[in-house]
Image (cartoon, rainbow over all chains, first blue to last red; front, side):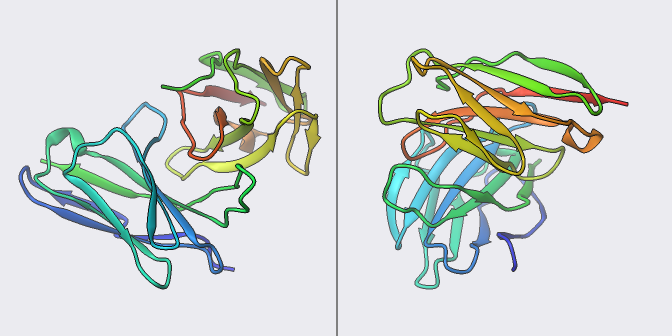
Length: 115
Length: 107
C-alpha cells in the first residue's frame, strides 16, 4: 500500500513569494496534519484537518493556511515567505478512532528553502 | 511547549537493549504517551503508545510508571538501523514534539 505522499520533494523560493505544498494521505485515512520542522528541532504542529474541517491550529501566523479536499488530500499554503520559513514541511495522515489517540503516518516531507 | 523531558543523547551497543527514559510529570488523566522516531532526513515513524498499562509490539516495549509521571521505551535488541532521534510525546489529539533523544547504536 502507498504511504503518505508529498509534493514537491524540494522547493526553492525567494522572500515575499508564496508556496503551495501538497499531501495525499494513506487510502482510507480522513485526517491530515501539517508540521514544520526547522533544522535541529522537533516537528511543530501547524494544522489538523478531519473530514475537510479544521480541527486544530498551532501557533503560526495567518500567512499559513491549509485546506482539505473531498478526496482527503490537502494543501498547505504559505504567503509572503520569510527566510525563517525555510524548513522541512511534514504531512501526516491518520484515521482517528474518536478515542483521543491515533497513530499518525508521516510522509517524507517537502524541503522548502527561502532565499 | 512540549510536556516531556528526555536526555539529549544516549549510546547503546548493537545487540543490547536500549532503554530510553522520559519524564512527563504534568500528564493529564486522558493523555496518552506516544513514542515516535525519526531517522535522518525521513518523516517521523510511530513506534508505540500507551495510556496506563505497559505495552509491547513488534518494535518495542513501553513501560509506564504507576503514577504515569514517567515512562521508558525499550528496544530489546538494538541494531545499527535503530540509530535515530526518539521523541516521547504526551497528547490527547495533536502531537507536540520536543527535542527528543538522539540514540546512537554502536557496532
